[in-house]
Image (cartoon, rainbow, N blue to C red):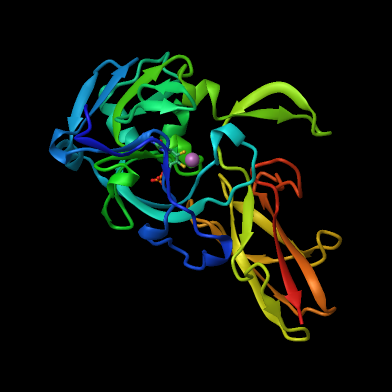
Length: 333
Ligand SMILES: Nc1nc2c(c(=O)[nH]1)N[C@H]1C(S)=C(S)[C@@H](COP(=O)(O)O)O[C@H]1N2
Ligand SMILES: [Mo]
């Protein structure tokens, strides 16, 4: 399906909120991250279609009105950009927490009857063009088919209103718990296959090196799929002044695919740690943590947060990792 127009062309992104600006539980749409690798295609709703093919017994093509035949489903999830694929381990906090509405992809796939050999789901958008000098034709991602049984959606609304063009109008994929790159916008094709998709955004970029316990590269890679445990401190603005001797609530957000079980905070650059209170996971949302802090010594203080997933994986304190600990320096006066 051809876009009506592509505007702007080329890579387009919105400057994300800084962590201290992420004070709302639900991110407003105008504050949400935006990332378009090869331009922003504008599609007409009534011309849009989604083709489902590959290893299925019943290939099919859906039009926008056909989506109404499926049960509506809503999910609120952390939506995080994995960062620039050219500097993929650079720590990023390009994130938001969004309420999505749409239908369950599983319900659609049930009708098209996947073949037993199908193991991966490839998804493509209507956008194509050059990224880093490489032809993207079109933007294509993949994910393990068993993941679809959990909660992958074909989304038509974001925070209760139809998707804006930059977020994938009229319909996009949303893979809650996976990095944003997997949630293909302007979704036009789904193909079931027995292998991973061989495309620039699946096998060339968006694969992280696997490090051993000493931090050395093993030569192996893993696809950038599940979101690793991470946290940010929302209540402290970098460089702000905090009064000594008064109790402050230090709070922020923690998230991971599968949920976060605990968050620890350090007020001395990681020398000592205190456990924060954290709310229980609610679906796929980020979780609020907080701790009362009464600053003592005057001067600059380095505050750090570390989250651990329910699977027991703690985010790294430092290093070139996307989910390296968030630090904020404040001045105790
Ligand atoms: N078709 C298509 N889907 C895409 C992209 C893209 O460039 N083209 N960018 C991906 C990336 S890297 C991210 S982080 C999310 C961003 O979604 P948003 O712009 O709606 O926040 O969309 C993903 N889906
Ligand atoms: Mo991204």
